[in-house]
Amino acid sequence: MKKLKAALFDFDGTLVRSIDVLVDLFEECLIEQSIKPIDRKEIRQLIGEPLDKIFQKLTNLVDVSHFSKNFRAKERAKHNARYIPLVEGTIPTLEFLKSQNLKLGIVSTKQRELIEPFSVELGIEKFFDVVIGGNDVKKPKPDPEPILLACKRLKVEPHETIFVGDSLLDLAAAKKSGVIFIGVLTGTTTREVFEKKQADYIFDNINKMTSLLERA
Image (tube, rainbow, N blue to C red; front, top):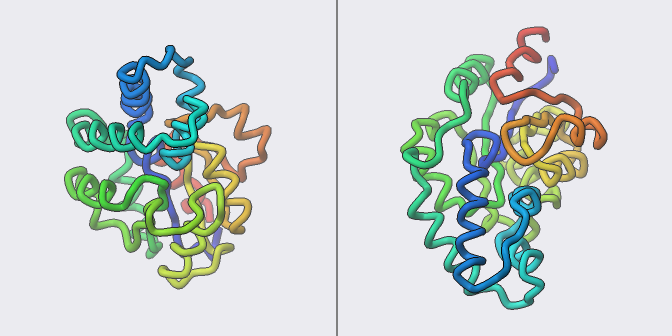
């Protein structure tokens, strides 16, 4: 940890408590198209994957463009602090990390055009030196491309970087890119699953990660 230069964060389920809202939106889109109800746990585990891929898995259809278009319209309406709050302790954590001269970034499959204005509303945009959305890369998570692109833009090496996420997609991308992975329990994945998949560190939420730097 002594050589740490950057910390990257997933967005949904890591910085903001959005998972339940997103599951609701997926359910609404399916119901409107007369798709039979799907277990919320199944939907929850898919969040973080590209939108079209999620609907393909939920519907067994190839062309899901109308589902994705409808979802994005609904998401824009709910993509604000009234419906989606920050995870507790997020701002103090980001302030602490900045005080340690770390470069910070967001790496998400969500479109950057949604992340950036929402970050302004939440008051966290000033902390981040780079934002990588799903539309900024050819291969989103679990491919390492988004994390490696963030490292490149921040001019840091992967082994000097922490990536914080709530899903197995985040963990897979971290392992493939060579960064240190912190799994947080505010999103889609349990401690037991993270332990089984050998996450480097596991915390209840991001404000617990400061202990790593305090011990360094």
